Image (cartoon, rainbow, N blue to C red; front, side, top):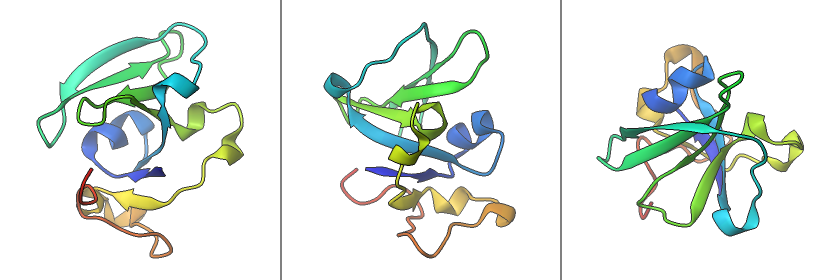
Length: 115
C-alpha cells in the first residue's frame, strides 16, 4: 500500500502540500542508522510515532498502533525511489488548493474504509 497523505501532521515535516508513504511489514525492512522519534495523536486519536534522522531532521518512517506490524516509510527516504508506486490520496479534505490530489488515483477525504 502506498500513497500521498495531505493531513497536517504529514504535510508540515514534508515542507510541501503532502507526504508520500509506503506501507511495509516491519519484519521485512531494515532501517540503518540512528533515528529519533516523537509521538502525537492523529486525527483518529491514535498515538502515531514519527521517526526522523537526528542529523538532518529528514522524516524516515511512522508507526500507527491501529495498523500493528506496519511501518510507513517516507518515500523520499528510500534508497531506490522508483520502488514507490502511489495508489491513493488520503486526507484529501486537508489538501491546500495549490496541491490538489490527482484524479488519476483514488481520493479519500479521510482514510479509506477499513484502515
